[in-house]
Length: 282
Ligand code: C5P
Image (tube, rainbow, N blue to C red; front, top):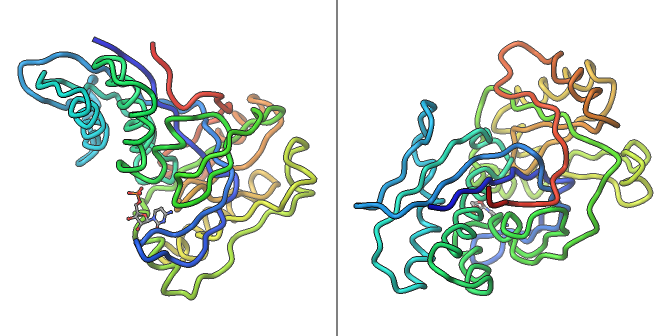
């Protein structure tokens, strides 16, 4: 039996370019692991199974990606050992926080150890499972390009934390990208570099090109963002294809105060440290 945790990710900016022939969009952005975690256990079983390890049920389809990752590693190892994957989900689903990808990356890492499959093979499997899985396998802070499969690790960021809020609706990533195409590839929501925390200041503005498409599909997203900006007195940004919203704070107490004053009906609101890891053994 082997256990680990999978960290969510936030996009500190996401530029998107014209859809490629294979259906994916070239991206450019800084991805950051954050301390919101799912817990996974992989064990030898009588039959292949995926289940929730707590009373909290797995939402439909969740866990499949983690299970697929573990099975892909088993195939590489040429093993026929039935396996069980237990998952305790705390990362909000369909929120733009990469929860499914984080689970898949952690499952790759756990299964790699379980079946004795090396890192190079795991890195090859990662993009086959999803665009964010290569980053989640690496973790920390990275500049991400290509469809999500070109990674350049960056020095760890520090000197700020995030307050993350998920409004009470979901946004499927494929629909947001398709909407972005239909709308003629709009430019995104921007935070000027002077409004960023000191470690990010002096670089580029923070831009998420998917914001107009996310708002077209869920117009209430803009109301949520403006409400939070008003409450918190600072700019609020969208992570990935949304609907997660976040803002920068200098320390965790400030961020805690912010997340204790959010609109009624909020799905998730947490102060959040940055993580140098995408996954960890426990
Ligand atoms: O790779 P993943 O399964 O996470 O992607 C989900 C969907 O998001 C893709 O099928 C595609 O529609 C869209 N996507 C994209 N460009 C990317 C990443 C994802 O268009 N770089």
